[in-house]
Image (cartoon, rainbow, N blue to C red; front, side, top):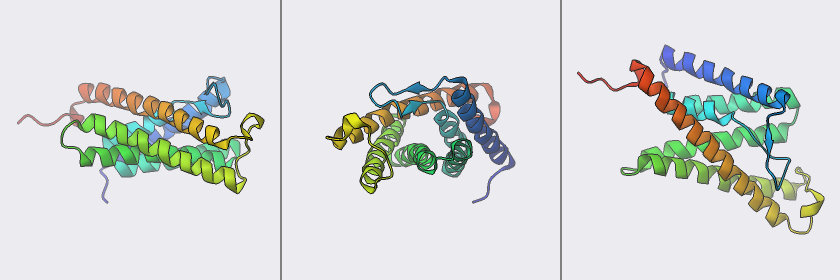
Length: 187
């Protein structure tokens, strides 16, 4: 796949923004914990990832997801947590990409829905696998019923997916209105 200079530069800037968001939100204490499972926290790192995908395509979206994984891994040393975040964000942009290719009508709704559904469903399965492989510690309140833990991670990923997709899309629309390079030619 050949990338334009604009796409390459834009992807690099958005990937750097992912790192800035991750570090800024982590060290400022602005990460909002999920009330029922505080180990999961809401953040804005998905917005530049979705924006990268909307502006430049699936490969730049995948690249910025990989940068999110690497940035979180470098900051925390937590391979499982960083890979889960990178996977979740990649699934969001992959689902959005597939949804936009599948739909003829209601393209935006299909894209958002498939992106959020892919993220939530695969992350529920991934958490299930991690719990039963012993790689994810189960809080004491969920030891009896790990299914509730898995459903809560699905619910968390639905909310985080909405934050990423809607935030990325609103930013995309604002950029599209202001920059003529992203508007279709009228000639």
